[in-house]
Length: 76
Image (cartoon, rainbow, N blue to C red):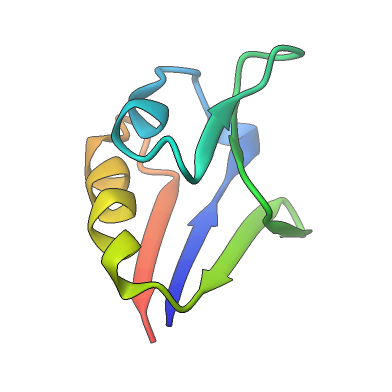
């Protein structure tokens, strides 16, 4: 299982995550920050859990490219 977490309130809107993992990230037209698609919010953290381990690589690349380091990925 893959777990992706996003701290959306710290997003600067650089768009790297959307370029590297467009299946999981989109930019909001309202505030210019990224949205982790189909995620659940809890205390400012947006979390997405899924079983497709093949998607881990694209989300991991997005996490590494993020200049403010607000994306984390884990294989559970």
